[in-house]
Image (cartoon, rainbow, N blue to C red):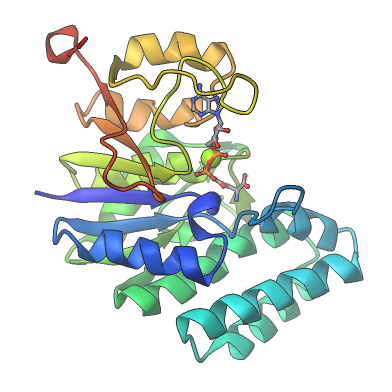
Length: 276
Ligand code: ADP
Ligand code: ASP
Ligand code: MG
């Protein structure tokens, strides 16, 4: 069995949560491909690293200091020794290249570098798995590119959210786009399951930030999910559905802080539907 796991920023907000991620990944040998987002926010009101990187591309010194400090703290907590080198390399290039999308992509890049060492898996750059053509991300091109890159790779940590275009320029997906990277990888490695680990135990009947304690949906079809997405359920990026739906790969939305919860299963056909 092959499982692709994607961990969102909320699951990788600090070193402590990275430890939980490590436990989850190591608890099953099927979890061979791990897609990571940039560091999310720990406290209410704190900005995500991606938001700070957008500010850095507009020359904010304080945002840069915050990103560096948070990464240094994270690295110390997980025992990653090459932190300074990675930070120097990344910020040197951000200032040299001066491109908004390049800057924004570096949160995922740094997280994948760090987590590949923490998990003892090969690092895979987002530019080698997501392809952009004529200004848009290309589903087929990305799947082919990812297949080539991952051929013979047993275990890998892959940077989500960005890819490369036909001119060799780094381009980002839209916000929440690491979900798309995860779906592309799931298709490319012919996964049996795509686990999407976040900070809720699955899809709920309403946004839990607005309605207290809404019911969690156990199983839902891709078609039903589309309707829910239009209603504002932002748990999973809408475009993450194509690469897995037609390949018949189910998605399981899971909660990193409550790994024992079964979460929500998203399946393709009504016969798989379990309405209990
Ligand atoms: P990640 O950082 O893991 O990608 P996101 O913030 O993108 O996480 O998505 C998870 C969030 O989606 C939850 O914390 C929750 O606040 C929000 N959300 C919105 N609508 C729903 C819903 N219907 N069910 C569950 N969560 C929802
Ligand atoms: N880090 C990016 C964002 O904040 C992508 C993602 O989290 O999926 O939108
Ligand atoms: Mg998300």
